[in-house]
Image (cartoon, rainbow, N blue to C red; front, side, top):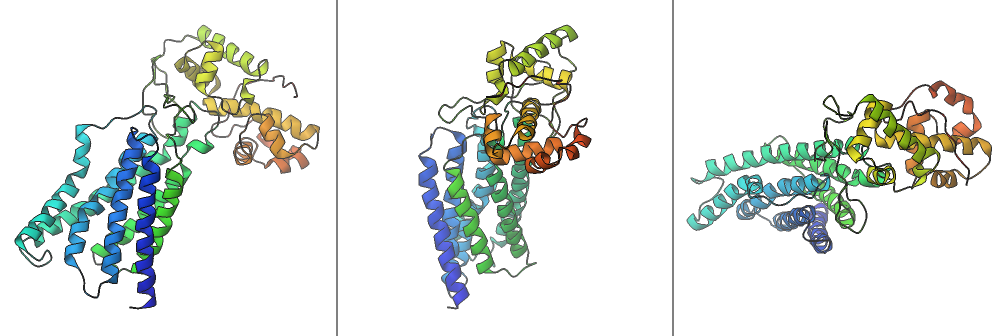
Length: 404
């Protein structure tokens, strides 16, 4: 056996072990949550496939039986990933439904082909079952490709929805999952090319990419909470306000768009009153300095329903809750940057940001400059003073920021 083959066998074995460890770690976290249950299923499929690949790579002859028996697990990983991400990005806990079984129909078909081949002792690549196996393989390639695309689409649309209810989104955007989903997509593109005969394939390439991807997922998935979960402890999730209603609903509309309130019952007078309450909460009570501020906390502070607050931000200020809060934070940060030599991180924490990276990101979005650059040459930021970056607030007006 060549060195590259030995390395491939070792990496496949390590991937299977990492997936098995991830099953244990993820399974310990609130096993009643659908996202974690589906992620356990995902890692189980990965563990079986990696173990099968290890046997295939280490065998002198091509093992059709092994490839056929692992096919149902290969067809199941994308549905499990989709169902897990669907719950992680939902603003309400999702329950298992009977129709979820439809996601695994292709896997069930391939399992039937495998067991039939075993019973008939038929060769799956040349016997009477060959056409059925080919149909199942093509269906698996198509389904998993679509499911991976849908998974990436959900992750891409997450941030605009988070911005409606959270003032800080960095730890909730599932950036690690978006990265690993892309890595899985690359691995799957290689799989499709291999099965279609476009590429001869390389065990070393498959095993290396698979190992890196699964290790990353194992490290992060064990500590990941649903994106809309209110805190680290309880299962409560904050729901996104919907159009023209005082209730909440899942979803969130198109990416980078705020909800339209064409059917809203709030008149201009009511919008002004709510806006005044918001301004008081920020200018007098300095609520924006709370690093864990959410739309629900603001609602409790002002005694205004979340949906009405969201409408006010959209219709009165032309921004999201996230953009409004961070504009206040950035305004105070600008004053602190120009008033003294305080450490940038200290300033970021004082005005309400929970990390240096979140502060830099918001500051750059609002002013077009890094904080250190603004401190040295504030005049460069003057060109952006009348412009609003995506998600930034407008019509806020001057406000008092009592230094602490």
